[in-house]
Length: 338
Image (cartoon, rainbow, N blue to C red):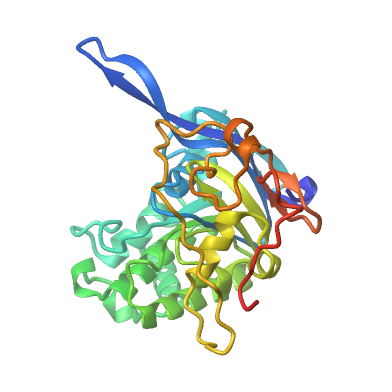
């Protein structure tokens, strides 16, 4: 989707299928296609927002990229220090050497932090395990990290329960940047926080990105948050990537009916320019038994016979804007503010 020579990370044909087993012999009778042939690139220093309804495979995709889950197929190419790694092919030992370059910020800032460890232990653990620092040098590095994320260093020996949700997420961010990674996967990092705190965390992430040239894969279901932080946006539906494009263009001129429906649900402060709400009929299909053809056709108000039988490929609509819809060039879909 981007010029490969400029991409920090390339995801190619990534799949994650979970087997469905039945009977005493645990015979495999099918698969849950949680991530189904997904491809995208992220250039260094940029943010790709990944959106979609709950259960569409966003978090699974992120975990497959960092190998917290083993992908079924595909490639994840990471380029760092003039070297190229396919994360899906690395052994456990090789992966440990690469992990400092790719970190993760989790959704729940309480469950992702050990309640038995102090801030010093939590943020300092990656430094100690990777033999970056220890003793006084480690403590000083943790103090510097706390200052970077806006936490008072006097809280160094406190436990996670003593902090608010926003403060706990700042601790998680400090841990993620402790090894100076190139790529951070943010898995709904603000969805569990109050709205007022969300803005603070988003601004912190953007400040850190500018200072350290960080690259983000920002997973979320709130499109207004994604619009604020992302350079490009990718839309997932039942495990598949169905649209990807520059943020402003995708929000102003969506090229897939599902994206149009998602955009219509965003609350807008300008009541003089309302967006007509698009109501989708039916339920989201199960990734264990997706419909034939285009997965979206049972809910799509524009579906025709070809949609029921033939899966649309992801096609370039121009301006590096891709859509997986048979009628993407014909439909005049409404965007935000139209």
